[in-house]
Image (tube, rainbow, N blue to C red):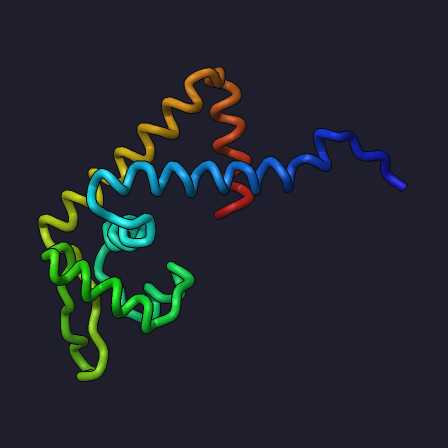
Length: 139
């Protein structure tokens, strides 16, 4: 039987705590931009390019009906547009408008700036190690 240290067994708890902190930061940074955290996440995902509703639903882990409502609201604000699918009349891709792209970048910058401010105490070596570890686990 392997002996585990408190630090090893605390990893799941630390990751859950980090997740909650990041969710709170996402809400805190998206609110002043007039976005819900889910809307900010959707806009951020679309920075990579247009995606279909099925793919967005999977990435965002939300039901298609909820996604449709969210896209409707963002479309009314001129942040996204629906692009008809070239071969399937029932399908469309969601694309950022220029205003939506600007807001998505603002939301992303606000979020990453807050994370940077919370992690300034880490040494360059610790930052590299943490980055490498997180990328290897979550990629």
